[in-house]
Amino acid sequence: MSPCDARTPAGLVRELLLWTFFAAIVRAVFFMATPQVIDSADSILYLDAAGKIAEGRFSDVYPRIPLLYPILTAAGSFLARDLELAGLVVSLIAMTLLVPVLFLLSHALHGRDSARIVAVVASLWPWLVDYGCRVAPESIYALLWFVSAGLLILAVRRGGGYPYALAIALLLLYLARPEGILIAVAALACGLLLRKDEGAKILQLAPAVILLAVAIPVHLIFVKRLAAQAGVTPRMSVSSLGFVLDDWGWTVTATGLRLLLTTIPIMLGPVLLLLLVPGMFARLSAWRDARAERVVQLLAGAQLCAAALSTFAEPRYVMTAIVALSLWSSRGTAVIADRFAQSTAYARLRHAPVIVIALMMVVGLLANILPPFFGKMSYRPLEYKLAGNWMHEHLAPGLILSRKPQMGYYAGMPTTGPAPEDSIEDIHARVLDAGARYVVVDARYSTEMIPAMKPLLEPANAPNWLRVLNADLSPYPEARIVVYEVVEKALAR
Image (cartoon, rainbow, N blue to C red; front, side, top):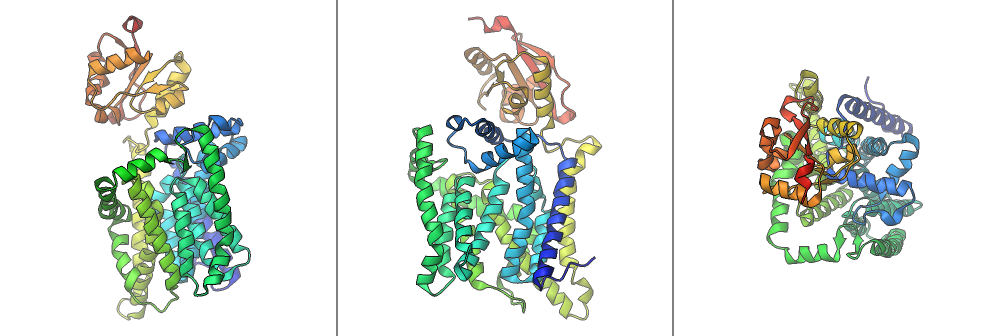
């Protein structure tokens, strides 16, 4: 079935619904086909904050956690009755809604054909689908990032209610992730590029400026009540800014270079990366909004700068910049398809570029879904959840020594971790100092990060101060996980 005609308002609405439904189906299938387990220590912090918010204990919320995602998760928990599921649902909804938002933005920038290609890419991109099934704020942040970009263009050009919608979107963006404040300020600066009438531009941006001018001090006061190291946004405190200023040179520069030369090319992949060239520079008869393009490019640049300042060259910090670049990769695909369509010899190949991209995305999705069905290790650490649940059901509460805190989360027990350079004697000393009751060793991460723990994957190698409780909790032979109990006499001083 061919897509609906998007040249009329009714056709556009129908096509938006079509792409939203398609994206939702892809994400729902992926969600049901992959093990759902927390794979990040930060996820536990977000769930902990959501739980405290749901109970009305705002003063107990860890002040370095941005509030929007925990608030949405807390609200969802009243329906789902489970914080982890509520957090997953928030991510699923946000990452699904991202697809129609990208369609509309691409439609405004590059026309209908490019918008449809963007919708295919965003619906099937394994990276985006995966983050839509995680307990993390990246999905809601990405949605608000592109909503803000679109509302910025509409607010400056059309006025009406759009400036007020932009103000709300930027406020939510500010509350979604620490770098949200930088992107909000960058968006207001970019708004000056969209019209020649300076007075009109300032007037259209006034609601957002006023709302942020009020919200930032209020947020600062709230955070300062919770922590001595207060900042205009979580993780942007006096101490963190001091670190950036002291370490401005090599670390930030090296991070930026790794993002540009490694992270972004890997996440885009060779095909989308090559398609950037015709997408950026080729001429095409379809509509192209150069000023609006410049705004999105500058916002992507601001996101890259924010990621470099974080000193972590991780994909999630530049997710929105990479997705923004895919708008031009999609235009490049449309350019090549148009060239094929105009050629008598190659007219039949006009859909080939889109088909190639879609097949690549599907292969990527299957690579994440299929391995467990063939007895191979999933990329999600399901063994952590199984071990934690077993400990919760069979063991008395106690402190767990483990490199990763997920077992403790599912077990309902606190955790402490050894250092990478620790020897087995150092680990023993940590157990004694902390009063740990259990030691959990896993092959997925612990033994790779702490070589001294590797012998403990075989209970026969365990020292006499450890007693094995279970060594058969993992469904994956290559991801073994062993639960030990600390022999009581070993804790004696």
